[in-house]
Image (cartoon, rainbow, N blue to C red; front, side, top):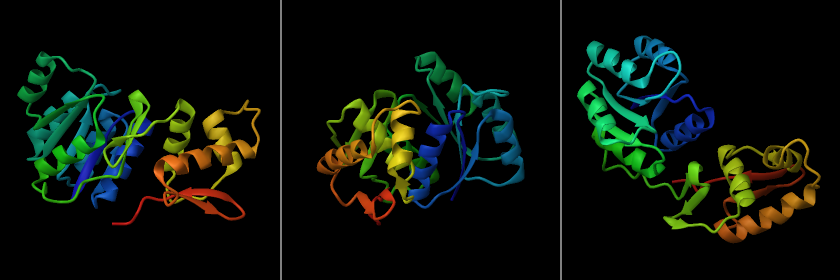
Length: 215
């Protein structure tokens, strides 16, 4: 099944795309409302996931246009969480509404329900809640410092890719860091104790690679 994912925050959009692709969905991305409509007219989708507050055209306006053109399921994501906001979205024809911050697994469940595939296995072993800098492993909250969270999140976002220690230093500590590569090794040891050695693999001669277990 194909999903149109429209979210103007790049990191959030990339993370959600990876979640859905891990479940076997095909995902087409858009970063604003006008781009979403261009994709909508160019292809056929089973579900559109739209962020309400987007540049150029709001998700609400895009939802109105999509509903007037085709029979498509629409799930609205928004930081607006007042009852009147939800009523307004639902009266527009939106099929479901999810306020931020949300648990990624809740989004997966709601999307599967809208698509009629709720019976599929949608459980993700590792869940991130970026707004709170929290992570859960098998539904258990991990005890992470902010820096540990940042490193784990960076590794996860680049899962499957071999990352050098210098790449990790620059991305997690920034350009003006004064740490050396041993700092990365120390943090990797700590993360392995918390999430398990099998998720963070050593790439000899390069650095490290994050891999979730295959289904």
